[in-house]
Image (tube, rainbow, N blue to C red; front, side, top):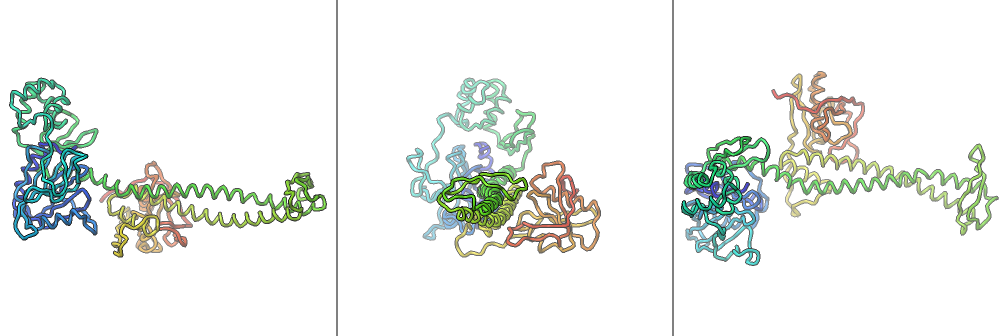
Length: 560
């Protein structure tokens, strides 16, 4: 959910106390809609303040570490220039609106200490991050807004104005008598209560109706709410998405309410899982679309080639017809369109009808069919080779799509992208001469019966590294049969593994394959020395022989 006025009020009070006089050491922008202020205070030490002015707009201290782009955005460089070395004076919530005003002092272009404001507006489509100078003029903003699209323009150089207030009375401004009248108008309808009073979220409106019962009770609850100190509560539902609020929510018996020590920890935990899943989807989405397109193209190409190959395999009938014409030249007259001949190649000596080109002599008709036969014979050899290469490439693409779906963090997706850049499927992001960052090697590690170690690759590049460079010739290699999946290697260290160790290693390979949802998966295993990489094959593509097959459940070994 979006932060409501009560949560933002609690945040403002909390951050104002914790960040007073904190020094701005550094400013970074890991995403286009997120700014991280690296702060240092006497009481808190080194902390990071996250300001998000995009989906899931929020402001809070965070324990998360973010990867930053090699080239910072222009807004980031401007904020560094305006804020670096500055000190935070206060964090406030003007007029109980859904925004936070971070007031700070920093040296301006002339070397004079000046007071400035960094304002984060968290209002749905109007969400924005705005830097305001000493005179109240906008210095920079994350999302410029022109006068044509909104009654309030937000552009550098313009005077900053607070967002226009809603056309309904604010909970903090109305008198008890007016509030009681509004509650009587709304009755027990939480939606109408939200429509009549500004500052209430639908969740809090439902809670007020639940607690109050009738109009007088709802009015009492609202008066108590506006005087109460906001408290951070996380709501975990048996069904549905989690939520948070500035008070304990009692309306749903299937909701577990967990109280936090502060709002920053609450929001950090709440959005960690929310944003991680979305970030992974954003990172992998473009790659998945690209590789899905490649897969469809390969499938169409292979279907056409197989159709051509089937036609080429019928070339023997052309040669037989050409031989038949040659054997019956005496019976064919120039200009014949068709002729019925005796088939001397069949012991029954049947009579067959042969179509001819009347513009050609009988010898030229035979030569034309012999030429077509030769071309089809060569085409069959080329098509067989091309189909083999296409099937190998399609297998590689299927493996890439599987590893993308199984990727657990952003680093794994970046490594897959780098692999696809090197393979020529994706263009590099940086067109300059910067050297790419070295890719990490961190396969999944497990311990199976007998104390043996099993390593399992996370992507095709790691599969190659694990199978062809890290594993010994007498270690044992596992892979799900005929489906995309990870390579798994049981390191024997000169010992003979037990049947249970082999079964557990096979189950690991079954767990990390595209058919892991089945109760049993066929897994092939053999010695590493019997696993070979075909010349020119993509990462992770191998041939193997002298293997055995185990039918095992896809599961991981029990933890120690």
